[in-house]
Image (tube, rainbow, N blue to C red; front, side, top):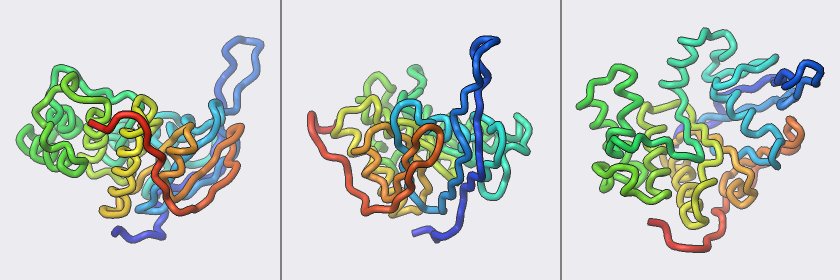
Length: 248
């Protein structure tokens, strides 16, 4: 288990405003003075109703969106101080992203999809595929490495997308509604996978979900409302209940 107690991600009084859509409109405050610290090796779920600011906050954490004010620090680096190129490199090497849609390239095999971030970063094909195979084994998908995405179920594709997020050995994995396109059985399997990565390997994971049952799978739940943190609580992790077809 990785040492805990070390804040790998720090958010300090962050605000995010979006310009009005029309000239006479009013600016929208999506994030309003959020403070948040995530320790190394934590699994944190951010939840809230639609429009609460949870996805905007995740985009700020990942450097996809820059804050209007305040600071987001990853491993002590203030993302706002980085130029576009340096920020792109940090995102590619230190942050693993998982989205609701798997974003796997249909013409590539699963192992080629997982290896792609390494290849784009200059790693040779053979070394990249070796690391991609190892990442797929970590998520229980080694036996499907040679298949293309259209031969995989939704749950398998999402596990492949998680392997792709892990292949660069990121400091943190950010997951935006990763179970949104899955049935409840596969949703449970994805949450259990994240928990296992945290508990067994010390991976740091921050997950956004609108579903309280999914959020309950994380030991720490941050609830957003109107762009602010409404509550931040630690609780025993409980996997979301299962129903529907068994995962493939």
